[in-house]
Length: 462
Image 1 (cartoon, one colour):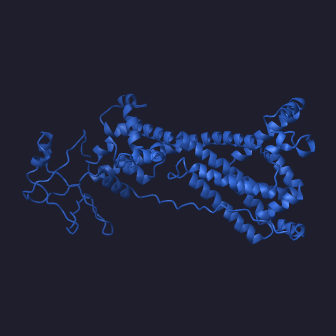
Image 2: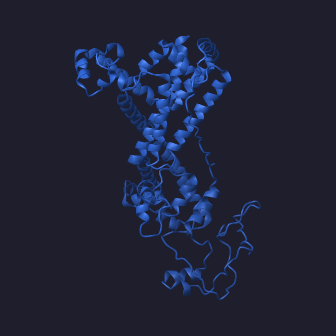
Image 3: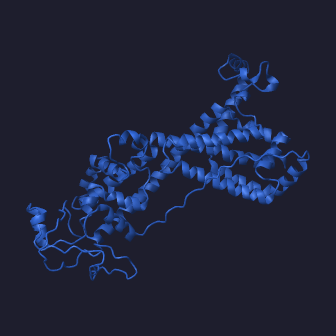
């Protein structure tokens, strides 16, 4: 039973330590802009495989294949899709005072469905699409969003594999720098009664109800920290602050449990094998090298233990929390009786500080009509229908304030909405949005001049 209790304590510790690795990996993603590069790669693939076919419907399959593959238009499309609308400002010194925003948050790292529709309206393709009827916009959005999600699923599999490799490298650097030999930690927990009892008391094993609450608390802490680390609003300047908070928590936990980790437990620097104090056995000192050369087998075993420790940490906090919760439900009552019997000295066990961060709620997936509304509103193109006289005048190059001789009166907020077309009924419970009906006949001429935006592109009415 002792090994099972040690596994419970070990899984709880690994949940915390693997969260440290997760924070480090998120910092690397932000520092190297890996997510932004991956999103732009997806958008370039979307442009060359889907958008080109929508814009040039008359091309043959061979011509479309020649147009695909990393074009300059695809790069501009990806840049426009990921450019954040919050970037900008006034003042002579605005760029200097907001250097962190300019360097690290000028572009999106991920796009929700609503952001995809809004950002699509800011591209050259979207500006031409905004001039088309609502039904055509809806069809194009449906196809583009489906293809974007399909490409995203394939890309996500690659990103997960890359994240595992980065997590393994970050975990190895962590265990090597801090000398965290998790094999020795588990052996220490299974053989040292005091450390095991203190660890079980810290995670609440002496009370089944407290243990259940602690399991839920660790789950909330882990999800909250991982959500904060991967959030779009967390800049690279905030990542070290989160890492420092986790580091302080780990130091407080280690001071309480006295685990065999750290530079004082560098290979062959155990107190029983020392001639000098541990502080003289740092990694760069000669005594350590001499002992490694004199005992190469032990040094090789130590290196393999660090590699195994890195692999255990790279499994991630969700894996260790799942193991911790299952083990806690299995041995909770046995651990309670053990801790109660071992704590006969009456010394109170200090509780480690908790990390009380919560994950924010996620937005629900919007409907296709909502995405169409978001695209139309973000495009800024007036949805007032144009007569054939207006279109001919604009094509001939007449000024927009002179091309329209039979304009449409400007509507006010209190004016009734335009009637729907026979083939596009508006639900009675839905909000009426200006421009939701594209094909109704304009009222009679009022003699009032209005500025009308020109028609761009080679679009044909669907």
